[in-house]
Image (cartoon, rainbow, N blue to C red; front, side, top):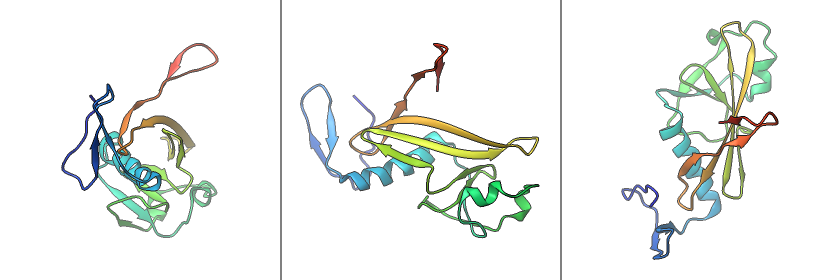
Length: 147
């Protein structure tokens, strides 16, 4: 049976078949909960801050010599489709979270040690309660698994 946190305000219904418990949540609410779960359990968040002086990642990419000192940030508790920096390194913006049926595609950005801009993509399954269940593994063209 999948893990569920019963200390929430989610409404549960019992499904006695092999799938265990399910939730009755609107799809939009499930998306918000999946993003929250991503930041809480799957991204090891110590600090989440809204970037106040830029609206999206494209504006940051245009900076020739990027430095975190250029950013004006304020601490936030949850992501809400604004440009956000996590743990002083990883950027998320309004295009970072894409939902497709029971899957969540996450794209985030960072600058490496050479100040080169990097992009990372991940794919997750989400359950009926908005929890991320596991990382979906896709096979690359060379037959290797990627996460």
